Structures are given as structure tokens and as C-alpha cells.
Length: 314
Image (cartoon, rainbow, N blue to C red; front, side, top):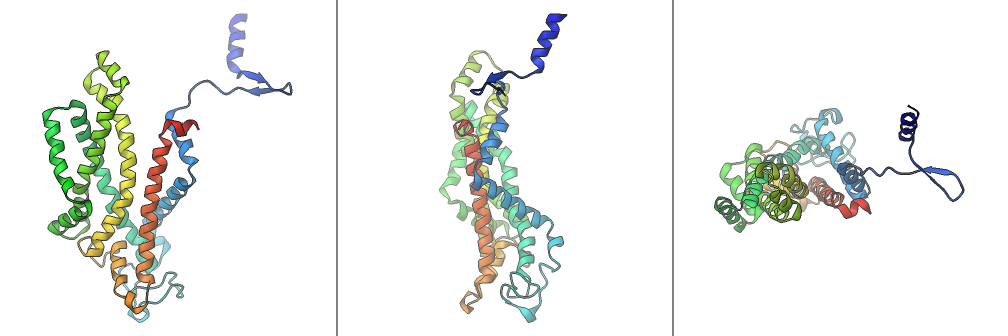
């Protein structure tokens, strides 16, 4: 009993090491920290990524709670005060060509702009992952034919393909998301395919195969988590690009239908008064598009570095 009590007492207290001054200091546990904690700690050290994440969270919250942040309608305006400048009483960012409050339209427009950029990626993500895993792991003729079919779409630039699909499907929020989703499939599937081929040739996969692991379990438990990480980084940076593409489609008139608030539509409305020396109508939504798309890219870079083992231990 005395021996058991002594052993229990030793487990109850952390090991200590003697300092140079003769005192005692706790010794860090030898148990390795979970991978997600290392990634979070590495991400938190990237100040630009953290600031970008805060910016995106604030933009998303402001868009969601837009009715609480402005008393005005995003579609109804006051023609009497049209094109009022920044700092107008009751209108912090001024009014557009139809007398609508720009701050209000930015808030409500963020809903559509963020939705068009994020929702197609969320929908395409699992589809592209399955295509990449199937074609890259099996390396069958069916998988190769599938990838060659997707490669045909690479002959068309992403923006031009999105414009063409939007023109065929017609303007509207749903059609824009569908067009962007179709455009993203070959790009995301190619990244998943390349990551799968690279991971499948590594030693831990070969060892699992030699051990006789079930191919389906091997793909889902060993291979998929590593492919998901690489695809996640790419998808995050794509969100920034899709903000620009979706705004560009609305700017060209093949995206969201006016008078629905959208950052691209706001920029298109502002270009009509640039020659009159009125710049705030187009400049403000343009700057918002720039900041949000840049924030997505910086977050993607932060996630990529956070998942790098060399950055986690540095």
C-alpha cells in the first residue's frame, strides 16, 4: 500500500527541474500537443492574417445585422439629396445617384457579395475533393478520362467562362452562384487530384498498403485529411478571387439584378458620375471589394503557414 501511495503521489505532482538559483521550476510535459493547437498558435502569430480574419468577421456581422445598423432602405432613395458627398448629415458615406444611402447599400450588399463568393466554394469543395481522390488514388482509366474532360475547361479563362455561363443562364443571384460553381470545379478538382497523387506516393501510404490496409479506409482515414488541408488553403484564397469575379459580373450586368444591393452594382452605378467629378459613389464600394478580397488572400496565406510543421515549431 505504501508503494502504491508513493507512486500515486509521484503522478499527482509535475516533475521539476532545479534552476541556477537553487529554486524549482515546472518541467513542460513531454506529451505532444494536438495538431490543431499548434496550427492555431502558428496562425495567431501571423498578425496580418489575424487582422484579416477580424475584418472579415466584422464585415459578415455587419451584413447580417444590417437592419440594426442603419435606419434606411437599401432600395428606396431621396432624389432631392442625390449624390450628396461623404459626411452629409445623417449619411456618413453620402448618397448615390438615386439618393440611396451608400452605407446602407454596403451593408445589405455584403450579404449578396459574400454569399456569391462563399456558397459556390462550399458546394463545390466536397465534389472536387471526391473527384480528385477518385482520379488520383485509383489512377484508373475512368479517372484519367474524367480529368481530361475537366482539363478542356482550362482552355477558357476563368473570368470569361463565368461571364459566358452567366450570360447563358441569365442574370440573378442563383444563376450567378451556379455559373461560378461550374467554373470552379476544374480548378479545385485539379488541386485535389495533384495533392492526392503527391500524398499517395509517400512512404506512410506505401507502408499502409504493404500492411494490407483496406483501400477505402486508407483513402478516407489516411489520405483524405492531408488532401483536405491543401484544398482548404486553395479554397480560402479562391474566395477573394470570387468576390472580384462576382462583383465584375454584376458590374457588367450579368450578375445580381438591380436594384438589389450588391458591391458590383454599386460600382457600376458610380462609374456613370465619375466624369462629373463625383468619385465617392464608385470609390467606396471598390475599396470594400479590394479590402475583403485581400483579407481572404491573407487568411489563406496564414492558414497555409499555420499548417506547415516548420512554422508550428519555430
